[in-house]
View 1 (cartoon, rainbow, N blue to C red):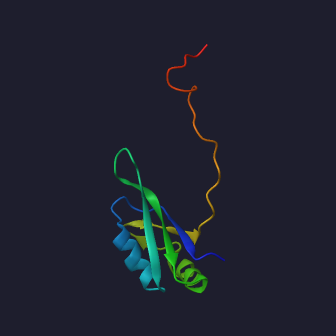
View 2: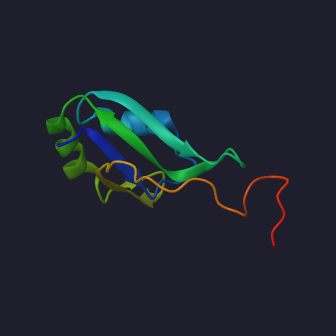
Length: 99
């Protein structure tokens, strides 16, 4: 089991420090990463927390999944690897016309 956790349904006001504080009560937090929207600079409502060991990660899931943080009920589970997505999108390269 991985020690990296997905944390979803976060209030936009929650900070990385808030995440760190909430999870530190259940073990050693080695990293917190709050996903931010590039265009607005605002939180996207989810993030990742890496715990020191997989046992601490399991303990944090059991203790925090379904609890309230920042006024919202959060979801905490094991993070899955990122799925490979095809790159690009749109219609070809700049300077090419659609026909």
